[in-house]
Amino acid sequence: MATRLMPGARAAASLRCEKEVARPHPAERVGLSRDLPVWSESEELRRFIAGYLALLPVRRAPLAIDKRFVEYLVELTDGVTGRIVDVLRRAAMQAVADRTGKVGLEQLQFVGARLPTIIGQKL
Image (tube, rainbow, N blue to C red; front, side):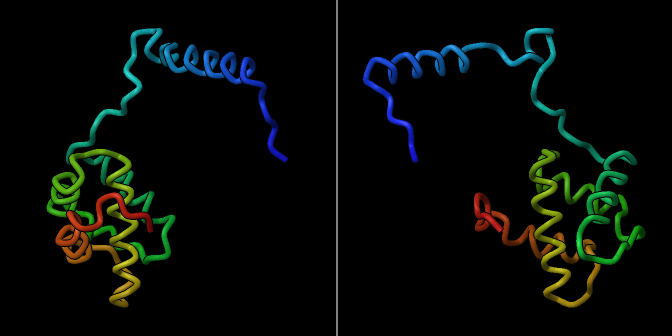
């Protein structure tokens, strides 16, 4: 059952929300950015990719995560973590669909070729 606010209470609740929105993020109060840094081709990113793919229902293919794979992934996603995860998830779905069971450059290219049409779509 939804709670109904009286007109004055509704205005007060709205003002409290506006104050919360106007308040700086805790990271910003101590001089840090709340934006995550973007990834670039690196061993650290390879480990992140391998760890994420290990969570998905695909076989591990560590040799497939080479420099070309990582550079292409960074190019597709601008190095943004959320985009990387989305592209890897879509590539894993393609690996299941094409019955290879492994995410490699071919699956990334399949996703990349369709990326402009799938931006913003939920899985």
